[in-house]
Image (tube, rainbow, N blue to C red; front, side, top):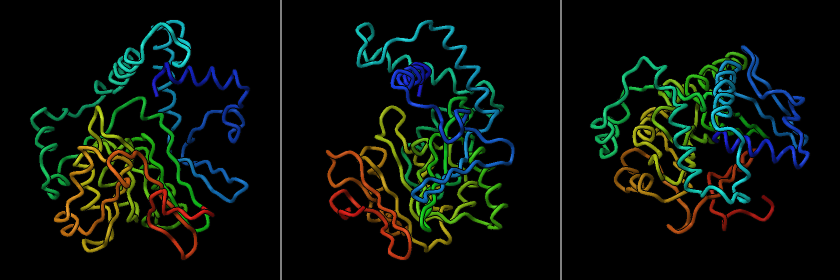
Length: 305
């Protein structure tokens, strides 16, 4: 979400008199030190905050104010705007995201265009999985919300756009608190649409999961990166013969490469997509107790779910 979009949302909440962050008494949704805030809903759903940290939110706040000062008055919501076109808004948001990438703060050399091209063309899973990890330095993503949702013995990690180092630190705190070596998950929504800079081997080795969800249409940045999927296939399971399920909410150039019978047989995984190429989105049903469904298209979802 860009500053423009965020300010529009802020204005809209105010216009509709919707309270800010009620579960946090109107304060910032943030992790303080080793304290991972927990919210329990009346339904029994337990939500544990894993990102952002106070430091990440402060950096984003400074950039937010800087951007507001630079741009001046925020435009009306897109649906009401008569001045700028949607294409103009998208271009400004992309420029803003690039400016917030934080690349200047990184001491690591960026991957060359040749390296990135080679990765985008290769389906050598072992080679892709062994590619060096260079973490996301985005100021925007450092302020992203990520949560662990648990209900009736079922757990779902929603990575948002959170940075791998922030998630790994929070998971380590949680594992220490619970006395566990790996966090059991029924599903993991992979951070940042499967960006190679948002999912590290370290993070994968902290969880026990056999179902990975990718939320992206593959446009612009061609996510998910092949490196990310390869890391999951090599490091995202208990053992080489354990089965995995990769669930994609779109069929796109960057996702259909994994719809290969040969690859699925070799690496013991199933790739799941919407029922047809023209459809977008897929329903995933997670049930508590012993009667757990792995995944479902909308037509498979029972009436009582």
